[in-house]
Image (cartoon, rainbow, N blue to C red; front, side, top):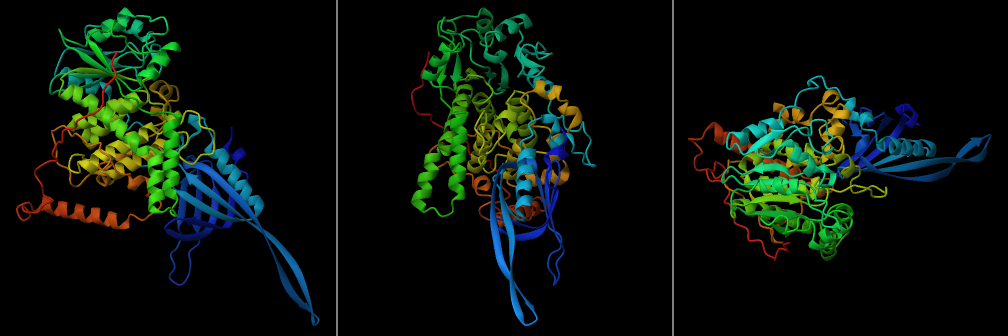
Amino acid sequence: MEFAELIKTAKVENVQLSCPGLPPIKGTLCITSHHLLLSSQPGGHGEQGTVELWLLIRNVDAVEKSVQNLGWYQTSRTNSSHQETRIASSLGTITLKCKDLKVLQLEIPGMEECLNIASSTEALSSVDSVMMMYPFFYRPQSMKLKDGWQLYPLQHYYQQIASETSAWRLSCVNGDFTICSSYPLAVIVPATVDDNVLKKAARFRQGGRFPVLSYYHKKNGTVMLRSSQPLIGPNRKRCQEDELLLSAVLDGGERGFIIDTRSAQAAKQARVMGGGTEPKSSYPRWKRLHRPLERGRPLQESFIKLVEACNDTSLSMDRWLSKLESSKWLAHVKGALSTACLAAQCMEREEACILVHGAEGTDTTLLVTALAQVILDPDCRTLTGFQGLLEREWIEAGHPFHFRCAHSAYSHARLKQEAPIFLLFLDCVWQLGHQFPFSLQFNEHLLLVLFEHTYASCYGTFLCNSEKERCLCEVKEKTHSLWSWLNQPSELKKHLNPLYTYNALVIWPSVEPQSLQLWQGLFLRWIRSSQYLDEAWAEIQRLVTNCEDAPEESAGRTLCHSQPDAAYPLTITGTANEG
């Protein structure tokens, strides 16, 4: 396929761009294989010169168009007589609704040009071939292709664990992706379990996702595992190798917890389809807890409803609160944080090992394991540690970014596999940062950047659905890494929290309704100006910098704090279902 075949009109003059919060811009619109560009002509009388729109077409979620026919009469005088001539014209309006929630409007003279631009934009934004996407064409001069791809190898994380205990080993049983297509090449497993046992256990788990180590809690030696559901089926099948694998995790008389992110009823129904959950008779030392978390269509529809409510500025207070509640987005945030806290509580207070899984093990499972680590581990709350966490628990662990982030909240396409699971994770991390403003080394800006790049990016980090697909597409050889760009000194300072102080304590968030807030920096970012908030943070940054430069002069300033956030204990209410 040639991009030129999809571009019906490449250039249009006198196009007006309108965007909330900015004055209209009139200029020349150009459409390329991956971008929409608009440049205004330099004006006179001291007006601002060229202003450009540089929009990645992959960022376009929906294209809406309307055409208005215009007509007027022009009067001409010939030999003392008047003659009226009817002039016909048309004006088209294209509304571009973007995956980062931005809404742009283009007024284009001419019906044909308007329809052509709309058609071309829709076609280019719908190209589904990974290797035709912009990261494979993006070549910044300041970066090298291989930079950033090896910053957070699993081997490095394993070495940290190996320095604490010899109970775990790095297995390359999935070295050719034949055991599990969604797992990386190497996984961390119990040292006493050989690869033949892993192969047989994989056949007993959906998609081959046998239990692997997700997190080692250095404080007490407990571990968190993740997997997919066991293939128990209606005949209650058993797998001795799977039972042996989970038994090898527990020492002596220890007991563990299985946190199932489905309801007990959903797990029971899955058994009819060949899935299910671990029966107590076969796994006597594991106690099962059900914490249902929504995924798929219900979560996507919740996202859509929330964005619709945020964009309707005509709502009264009562109507706004009603729409916010009916979207159920904050309820999903509460559910995710509560389940992650349960996992953290089992490890930190009960000193028990846990296994987390739902059905496939690539969505809510990763949401819980990643959030629990941010709560438990201060290293995961640093900028470097957080990037490493995203690599291990989302990218390498097989979250299907290509499917889940194909569309955002505006698309008119029929929903397939879209679901904002990763966005829900980012929102939960923002809630943690909001409740513990000193404990995260990174700021909201980093979370916003990650949200944008999961849906549309010039970097290859979030491309594809698994490591296997990234290898087949040669993503690491032919695209740049997002981490390489983010970690450049000029970019790095934008993402640092000026109030950060290392906090070795576990941070227990409150999940009470009064404590959870709408993430305005994301959901309202294009609706209202953040100028004053940005100025306030810039002033905080200036004060902290001055404080660091002259500590003896500013020891009494409150910004030069020495005490980290307090760690508030969380009591999780409700009775858990157990098998």
